[in-house]
Image (cartoon, rainbow, N blue to C red):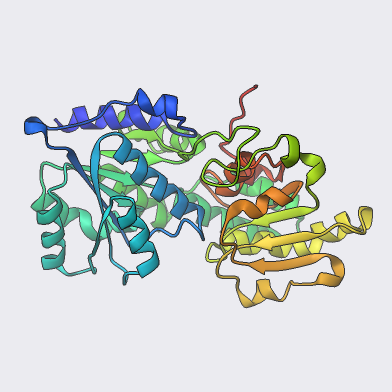
Length: 374
């Protein structure tokens, strides 16, 4: 039975990975159990999904909705204190929400009893570490799925490589090249923990095809335990209006109606902090030298003090902070994505494309993205 669930989920995530149009979603199988009961899926996480402040939050919420489309009754439990706005957002979309503090076995047992999950999805490896052994004891028949988001060992290893390369006086180009060549070694504690979580799980959802290949080829993870599940989003038509389908790029929404540059990214994520600091110190002055009237707007939740100090209207650089809607992308002509390290699929690139926005990116930011003609 577990193998059957694993095969079906692997098929569905592969079918709806980077885009999932209404037509494609209609072809996805609906899962139900004997007696007509909908299959139950429980998401366990350390955090409540914040789709308005991080790409990880966008992807988690989209994955929840995908499971609902596939016929699952979904619940979400987080070990952090509830944030009312995000709890209400889940509940408004038909997802039951629970608080499940760490090291509280009775609370986890209560959640498992109430949800009776057929599938448990662990949001990142450290959540799997915290909960999987009890889930296995209390719900032994449930399929245990690890959602990696990005490969943490790869991202953190690349960060260290970039920092060391720059400290040696090398250029950013050299640092990025070194990051791309980096493969985490067996001495990496992050890697050992991440691989252990993969091996304990029945199925692992991998965001990037690059990381899927790395896990299989370099670390020997059987291919049947890996399923590519990037971002789930509808395609934006040229005449689309603001909203979940993105923003159109034809007619009144076209290139001539837009102006200037933009970049986005939550600042709890170290790669985004490094990117905007490099952008402000090296890249933006070169752009302004060629385009003296150009303006750059930097959006992202939780800007650090260092990021806020980059605000310089006199040089056309505006640190705007939190954006309540990605519709801010609709006003710009180009999105800049100068990531020197990172992993996974970059939500800012996905969002820009949905808004008809060209992207100028480093190889790190573009990694795992595959364009299709037409």
